[in-house]
Image (cartoon, rainbow over all chains, first blue to last red):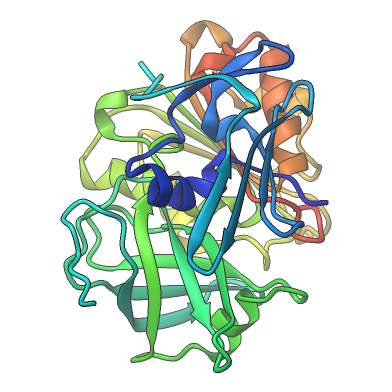
Length: 87
Length: 251
């Protein structure tokens, strides 16, 4: 399945969270690696969007949409913090 | 219930096609006017939404290839034969047509003049689009930040913005390198292979210069370039990447 990165879901994330989330700092709940949302692995092949840790492949985020309503599962992160993590 | 756009909130907007032009046989640049466009940062993108007569919708994200200072929002769309959206945009869309989009979005893969440099821009195939926005922004702001760019394409025919790159290469702060990975003209004086560690070592700034690097292209290309630079001693925190998946063929 084709792998993209967090930049590709900037619009969807902004639609859900009301601001840019691609520069947010995040920590994987499985391996503990930290990074920014723009760098996480994204897959579009299934019925929704699946985001995985680029280091250990742990599922970080799942977004599905039905009848105009988003269902967002973010339990894979140990931490997700805004605003921007960029200096 | 009537919906009112909330200022600052991301909403779908109607853009109008002003001009279309083939940049390569597979890539078409589409210039758009967007009423009330709030302006963008170089490197940002927009989501495009197509709606079929039966109501089925498909969304795709495209980098903006124009600078904030340019008059239009330009998208350079590569035609993917098995694509749901790109064949329509490349084959069907005409001047005067309307297109639904939202944006600009993304605050990570962006370069504004105050971020400085020196800059190293690495493009695989149509990954050149957001980097072209950065170079145009650089020129429009008369930036003195030195820029090195490495563009990889399968052939000269497949190289985006050829003439513009040649013009840039003649300008002082720009140093443009091109590698053609499959087919080269007989008198070709540029590089002739896929990017690797040796090529990056030759073209990139020395790690001690702490360049700010932007890499955009198919996933495998971006991984190779980023890992190569880190292997050469570049600080991963100074490397920003954008992967647009696999386009079926490696640039």
